[in-house]
Length: 156
Image 1 (tube, rainbow, N blue to C red):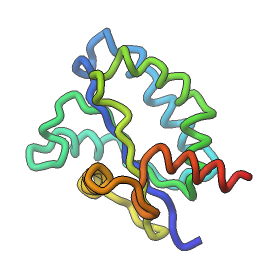
Image 2 (image 1 turned 180 degrees about the horizontal axis):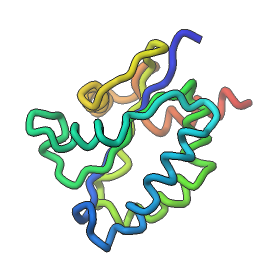
Image 3 (image 1 turned 90 degrees about the vertical axis):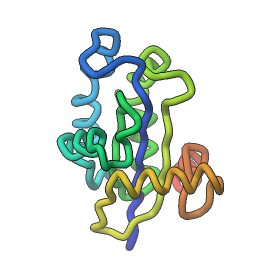
Image 4 (image 1 turned 90 degrees about the horizontal axis):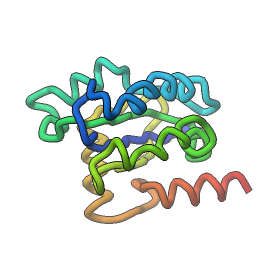
């Protein structure tokens, strides 16, 4: 295998970090991330301090999106990522998304292939997401629909 699968997902929280109305989400983040890191096929996740800096950096790609919650990670393949998203605590926690995220501004997901060893940054992830929005899914850049198809096709 010469490539892995990068994923970037983001959404805007209804309330600022630390607000009691999103405590259920905030309390679950560390646990979900720990489960992800132990999941088969997990390769890497951008550390929290780097992600926080990327979200708050005035020159950064996400600065105009206050209250962003995001994750950038790398997985061995689509099946590994899909299993984590759909078969772990992650799936149960995200059922609360309508209460925690701005309607219509959550669950933004983009996946793309990266060479083994590559660690993407937020600017790369957001650039890929913009390509996905403009051009739709392709073999190289895709969202949840193709992720599901690839994961189930490879599992068969």
